[in-house]
Length: 114
Image (cartoon, rainbow, N blue to C red):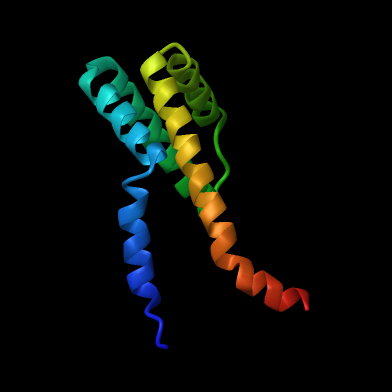
């Protein structure tokens, strides 16, 4: 029997959309988007985080100002319940992906164990 792993992946994509983790994340994201302050702060945090990750991938050192800026934004985020809730939902979604990833790589892990 021929297996089309891409069909399986596409089916998984559809099933992810039906999970409680995804639906909760979707709702939390919509709530952040409704709040102008929370949305702007969340976007700012994502931009800063993305820029810092890019610098790290390029082997560049982070400046003290950049580190301070991240901490300042993180402190502001801690005061916004909508963003904290969204980040909790993101962690739940990431845990789901981690669990699924472990299942997917199991054949390779078993192959190299023996």
